[in-house]
Image (cartoon, rainbow, N blue to C red; front, side, top):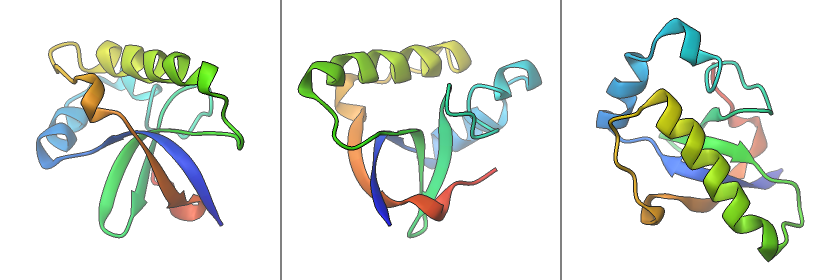
Length: 98
């Protein structure tokens, strides 16, 4: 079943940075905890973000972006992602990775 996933596509550079994150910060994206972010694979592409419940009101879009951006800034403080990096993707739900 396809669902809406909000986040960023993981580039090879970003993957290298995520591999260097300290153990204490891995909790924010490695363990598929719905309070934080998830790594998801789909068609040989990897994404970092979170699943959204359908429907998503337009009022929540800024809050969703700010939440995802703040967690990414916490785990990757030197990475400079702009708003253009954040997107909504239609992905198959059973593609979560560990």
